[in-house]
Image (cartoon, rainbow, N blue to C red; front, side):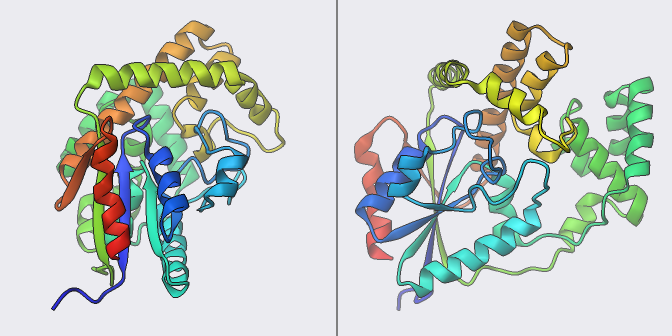
Amino acid sequence: MGDARPTVIFLMGATASGKTSLAVDLAEKHDCELISVDSALVYRGMDIGTAKPDADTLARAPHRLIDIRDPEQSYSAGEFRRDALQAIDEIHEAGKVPVLVGGTMLYYRVLEQGIAPLPQADPAYRRHLDERAASLGWEALHAELAEVDPESAQRIQTADSQRIQRALEVHHLSGESLTDLHARAESRALPYTVKKFALWMEDRKLLHRLIAQRFEQMMEQGFLEEVRGLAARPGFSPELPSMRAVGYRQLLEYLSGGKSLDAACASALAATRQLAKRQYTWMRSQQNLVCLDALDPAAREQIYRAVEMA
């Protein structure tokens, strides 16, 4: 007998690989609805730098979980899991197939595996870590993390101050490593048949050219002005979670006088390439992932058939 559970489609891929275009095509041609899996698209007013689908596209192919927070607000992976599960159930109840599309790989992991109950942030301890990092450097704090949580230290790059800070904070507050807490996370297997697809581009030089072309288009469309407008909002802070999005934090460095515009743009491009590298690393770790050639329109027929058979 076949699997009688309802189907969920994951459509993942690196930044600039064409996920949105394929998802919109799916929504227009097949009986499915889209759920965004993107930690930046949740924010209203962050449109150009996130490559958010424009109003016409969203009218033709609505995406759930886009524009659900103001930039001054936070949105956690746990909140995403809650909201995504609710959206999936509603779409199934409507007799349609949910297609989750995006490149925030943490969200896919949390959706599938659940999330560990972690301690709340401690602003005072974070300031303490920031002060120590200013004196010693984040590499030194990364070395300290390696002593108490070697598995997390192996996953986290020495320059990733946000994740180093959080892992050290969790250990300080709970007395346990982030790795151990995740390992104890409640196992909540999804009650669906999950079919995973990824738009894949073997030619990394081509991907990097596409990333550069898209960033140039963003700048022409007014990306810098968008960031300037966000920085002028009441309650704005460069430390907001929304401002961790690639491109935004680099342009903020220019606006604050910390970098030239050329240097900020170069940093944004380098950060985007690093993001794509991390996305590919994560996708390679996935089981039962069907890779689709991003440059071959015929390869996309596989995901069309998966939706039709669901």
